Amino acid sequence: TEEALRQSEKLAAVGRLASTIAHEMNNPLESVTNLLYLAMTSGTLSEEAHTYLSTAERELRRVSAIANQTLRFHKQSSKPQRVSCEDLFESALLIHQGRIVNSGVAVQKRKRATETVLCFDGEIRQVLNNLLGNAIDAMSAGEGRLVIRSRNATDWVSGRKGLMLTVADTGAGMSAATQKRLFDAFFTTKGIGGTGLGLWVSKEIVERHGGALRVRSSQAEGHRGTVFCLFLPFDAVAR
Ligand code: ADP
Image 1: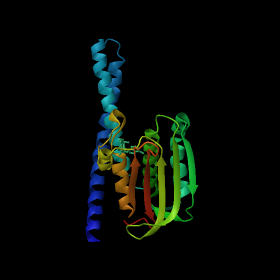
Image 2 (image 1 turned 90 degrees about the vertical axis):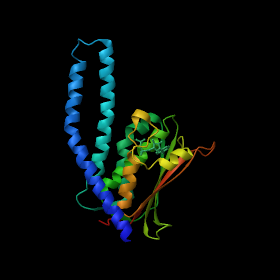
Image 3 (image 1 turned 30 degrees about the horizontal axis):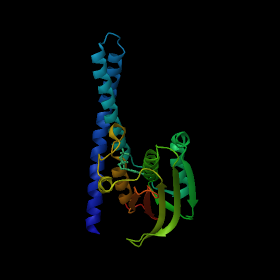
Image 4 (image 1 turned 180 degrees about the vertical axis):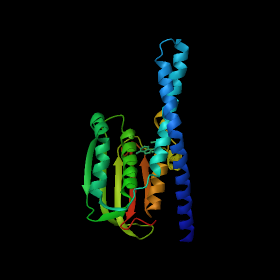
């Protein structure tokens, strides 16, 4: 509809603005980081001054993480590509390989999708990276199971045909309060370790592709965990 179109144009404009700001911030951030490093290693600091500087450095790293997340957000894949679910999932798994091995998370794959999808694949890869990263974060207590699935599907809301990718974890799950806010920009429960931009960015990307990103999560004993469902229409590129 026209309203949806206006909404997606608005989001794209916000994205461009965010990316410009993030880009402009990157160079000064880098030089401040370098200066802090020089100050910290200059060797004549009191313990107190050292504490201040290392706190400043930590906070700065957080700002950098936010800038990077925002910047990647709008890096356009130059041309839409036709990709398979297999390809999308494998590249995300590869990125998280180290953490999967270290945390002892077991990965199960159930691939039933036979079709490919036309999309800005760099962006969709970023979405899957975020979903997998969050799932692994949620299972940091160890011994979790990560289940990824793909199938050909008809979206139950829009009726469009496409691919349904799901990422399920047996991690901590989310409270009702978290579920209400998880797609908000800067909402995180990870303190200094999180930017709160992953899902916000992901939802924007998916919606711009005419798809949907939905979540189900439980903290109930016995079926604790979270499932993210990502629907992408076969002809996902609507720009
Ligand atoms: P970040 O990972 O930087 O916190 P996100 O936008 O990716 O930012 O996620 C927002 C919040 O949603 C997380 O801080 C976490 O509380 C919650 N969340 C996301 N995915 C999961 C998951 N698989 N299991 C439990 N909580 C999750």
